[in-house]
Structure formats: structure tokens, C-alpha cells
Image (tube, protein in one colour):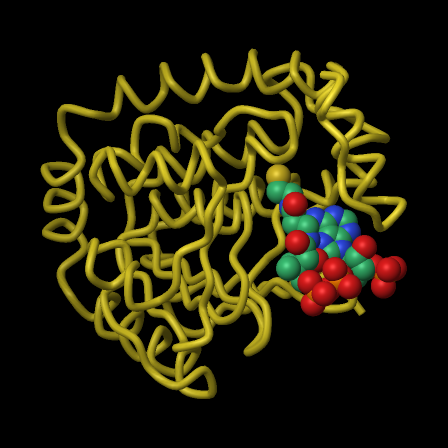
Length: 254
Ligand code: COA
């Protein structure tokens, strides 16, 4: 079974994460396919809206740690960075349906989505600090903006998770529904968006994002350089080894 399912219904492209046995963690191949799909959708006038969705029990556990160790993203042309540039510069509406854990890029991706619908089981986390890493996807810029500095500090400095209700309150999520209803709601809203005049959607999103596009691009690049460097440092090596060996990391000597 493919790790990603791409479905085109009318003018809506749906990208379904379909690697549930590995908690929908993203491999380099998945990032490459998503980057290509977004680039194609951006250029295709008949594609008006993109939906990201996972499974009722898991949105995504973030980067595939084993894959990351095998092919660390050390240069800007690596698939993860291509994906992040494609998603952050996508000019058409992006919708996400989130159930269960959304870890790392599973959460930071949502800062670039326009409409996020969550199941009441959704749990968001950005545990980069627990992995000896720094934020990615411009989340060091966007999390404080969206969540307020205090809550962003809890999420990014402590790596604390936050639940659907908190995400709703801070405006990251537009609505919470039972997990079994999330994907259907996202599809309905995407079809509703696709029925609007495209020029109005494009201009509205452009104005809503205006003023920060350059800052986002800059932060993506800056974070990417440091993230790549930190992947090879002792803290990340210990965190990843601990994950693979199913034990707690020991940072006491790092
Ligand atoms: N990378 C690689 N494999 C992962 C993964 C990841 N990010 N997340 C989960 N998996 C794998 C596990 O190793 C396990 O594989 P196995 O069956 O071969 O042992 C399988 O997926 C199931 O994961 P498990 O941890 O047993 O599921 P859970 O329901 O107990 O917990 C999570 C789910 C998402 C809370 C937990 O898997 C987790 O915290 N994952 C890591 C998240 C992370 O740190 N991501 C990196 C962000 S940069």
C-alpha cells in the first residue's frame, strides 16, 4: 500500500497520509512526492484547494526518525525543505483534517494551512528540544505569533503537547468535531472553497499573509541550516538512538 494517497475529486486535491503502522511518519520519499504534488497543484488552474488528512487515530508522528538518520536533510534541495517551501508559498487554500497525535512537522505544517479541523482526540506537539533539535517550518516565528509567546514557549522550549481545545482557543484550529467526522468536514469545506471565485480566494489569502511571506522564507532557511547542523550533534544523536532503542534519552552529560 502506498504511504501517500493522492486523490483528485473535482477541483480538490486530497493528500492522505497512509503509513499508519509507522504512525504516519514522513520519509524523504513522502516529502518528495508531497512537494511535487503541491508544485503541480500550484501550476494547475483546475486544482483549487488541497486537503491534508491522516487517519482517525493519527495525523502524523513527524519526520521518520530512522529515515532521517539514513539521509539527514543537510542541503536546501533535500525533499523536506522542498516540501516546506512548497507548502509555505502555496497561494491556494490549504485545508487540514487532524485526528490523534500531530508531532513535529505534523503540527508545524498546520501553521501554513488556512482551515484546520480537528478531532477531539487531536494532540499537537513540537518536541524539537527533546530531540536535541531546533524548530523547523518557520515555527519559531509562527508559533509565537499564533499562540502568544508564553504558550509557544511551553510548546517549543518544554516540548509540551497541547490538545484540540487549546488549539481551538488560540485559533490554530477552526472547529473540533468527533474524529469520525473530521475528514468529511474538511472535504465539505474544501468543496465549498472550490466553489468560490478563484481570484477572490487568491487575493484574500495573499492579503491575509501579506507582510510576512519574506520573513517566513528567511526563517525557514535560517532554521534549516541550524536544524541540519544539530542533527549531527551529540544531543540529537542520543535522542534518536534512544528512540530507536525504545528507551529514555540521557542528556545528563550533553
Ligand atoms: N519515526 C519513525 N518511526 C516511528 C515514528 C517516527 N517519527 N513514530 C512512530 N514510529 C514507529 C515506532 O517506532 C513503532 O514502530 P515498530 O512497530 O516497528 O516498533 C510504530 O511506529 C508505532 O509507534 P509507537 O511509538 O509504538 O506508537 P504509540 O501509539 O505508542 O505512540 C506516538 C505514537 C506518535 C506518540 C509515538 O510514536 C511518538 O512519539 N513518535 C515519535 C515522534 C517524534 O519524536 N517525531 C519526530 C519529530 S521531529
